[in-house]
Length: 578
Image (tube, rainbow, N blue to C red):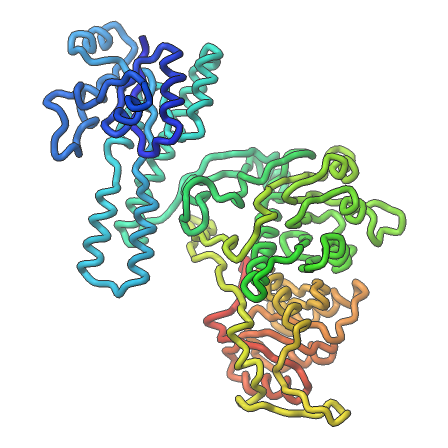
């Protein structure tokens, strides 16, 4: 008879798993709480505490950390080791299933509490004690012993019934299967220890360990091989640590339903698209309490077409395509609604003069089967990725996890892009003109206008411009008109060039820039950039302040009938992908 050792914090489904093992001929041994749960579920089980010499000690803190357990895990499959175990009456343990105390959740609870209360030595001590109490030692040690002993080791709940199926099929390819489970157990323990190190070092120790979930043919270029998509268990948790399970918007949860396997560049575009789409969803949810239909297209990561429209998905796709009909060719598109046959036809033929539009990828919550057939490219070069979570976006969908960027010999670390422009808080400022006073000016018909006051249309355009520009490569100036991206001047070395590029892209795509809204991802150091926008007919600008010439820029806007909205650069600068 084989022996399985089970010791889990999360008891959900554990009885059903143990029943499967019993039916396969396993004897079950388990730690205290798990043993009680299994016994109550009708499973015959031996409590580990009855097996260890002298019983549990130190208030049950030391139970599985005993030679009776670890000898059964580390013994080699030799006559000598088997005989020694038999002489000592120690069972050979064939399978171990362990999950660990939720250390990361405890760290997040302590960290959240410390942000809400003034820091004191007493608070810090209580926090540290709470973390130590939730730091699992026996669990990680059993996992590592089982991995070294090349036992069947389960460290991930998702692998429980994969193991059951493997056992039922006669344990095929045993060496590779056992090695893959051992590798995952080591990864889980490493991430667990890293979380502890990160907390106790006050953030001076950082890093992460990830598992490859998909291999890409190569990286950005054909000679950069091998490459792949990796998922990290701790980084893939819901943003902010709320709840359990994986973040539904993590890259590993975008499933390919048709087309060739996504490339490295495709995933880079999906991640950039997701930043833009979630920022659009967040800014409209915050300001209006409603997420509109969203369609965004990117080329090389930067949006070349984007639209946020409340009326219908059809118009959202049309306006997204019309943003730049040339750039979208061969691009990647993401929407927050299902793609059906009608929408597929628009993606294919809108403004194409009888031809068919080629796209490298389309990402949506769902596709109809016939829509996929319509949109397929020769050689399956268009990838179709599905994630139902895209249909449920809100202000809480922003990625709040720390962002890392590789640099030679290490990496840079920074908080994620969490700022959301809230025009509701700006109402007093929007009603003030240059100099802090209501500035009345004539439009030529003797009708006064309050410089700086936004109407409903301008406000919505400005919000979309912010969401697109703040997720485009800095430096950026972004133009939006009627909730539609018409020009995106990205990646420039100076602010004037950003303005000129945005206007050039808009006009060359056939758009009239008159009365468009502009977003600048940082302040205008001189008035020249605002002058360029003014000559193009721009009447609404959002930019941060921080220039020694802020007053000149505000006065120019006041004198030229431009609504100028701003926040300090320290609060709202929108650099992205620097």
